[in-house]
Length: 103
Image 1 (cartoon, rainbow, N blue to C red):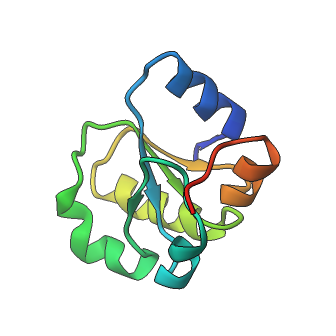
Image 2: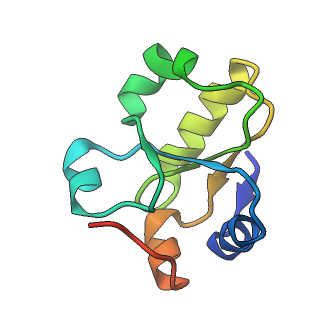
Image 3: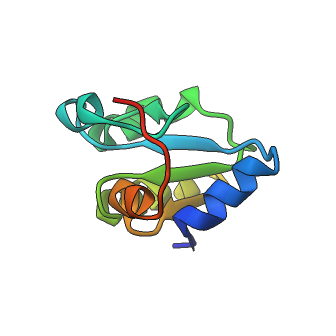
């Protein structure tokens, strides 16, 4: 599964690239903090809600540390989402790299 680093995503967003950040953590995790502008869709909901997403969009999936996001990204790729990657290290790596979060 393709991965992108938090710094890569930050740089691309700074250049104005349109990237959908998809947070697949559980509700209690989402309520603690999240990447600004992210869409919340818990991993268990992804199969039933994938139709809400644009298959041509650039999507970066994230969770806490990267395991669930890799699963969600693989599921989306199986459904013909061709521009999907997983955030390496998840939101914790995002925070460690100095990324902004909403609380």
